[in-house]
Image 1: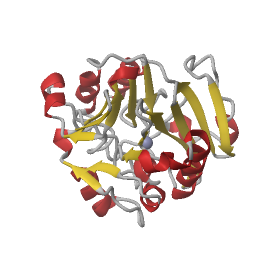
Image 2 (image 1 turned 120 degrees about the horizontal axis):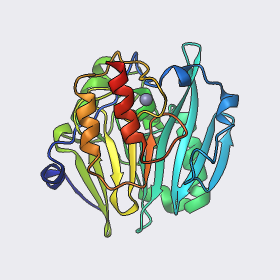
Image 3 (image 1 turned 60 degrees about the vertical axis):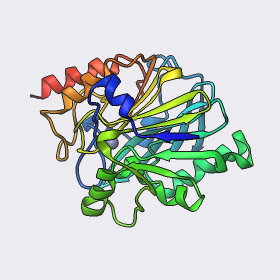
Length: 281
Ligand SMILES: [Zn+2]
């Protein structure tokens, strides 16, 4: 695997900075998610997400949706402050066999369950070829770090995420152990396949990152991409900068866009996010 900071990315996309941030330590989901129940999560609609070929339930609060060859959206429900929140992360097996986890489940326990499943699915040695990317300091973006680091998985994250996690993050969550300057982003190379970690500017949080799998036209937008009809918790958001961050993502060629929360997985989520933000002002 080759790693470089994203000078080329910045050249190609000008400045891509993205952050998803919300309230105390976590959720940026809107009221729709805030009032959803675990039972509702099981009623996911294939009609809404035509790219889903299979759903795999690992636990009552944890399931995967296969969205392509070796690509899985991981959805984990987490109860916080009396409400249940659903968070997405993304697991992709690259052409050279490496597993890339963009974002993490809420908890080390759920993350451990995903690692256990990955061993069964991809082989016992697959975890030794896994890397993870924290997409922000909120718990739904890196709450699984403890399990990943214990398993020896390199965890990438920005210097701003490390700073915000130390200052405001959830207690007991270890920081990423491979740190890059947030403004630079990061490009990871696996054989001929590249993964771009993109910071398009402050959005739902000051440090939110998107992860782009160019060869697959697959974008993990994390919490800067909205799927619901409301912004949700904006306590940590930069409402003025957020739309311009999203507009920088519009230059990417995408077939599938994965939001931080919600079932929709279509490219229309980018414009949808801009529409919801425009209505919020
Ligand atoms: Zn979120």
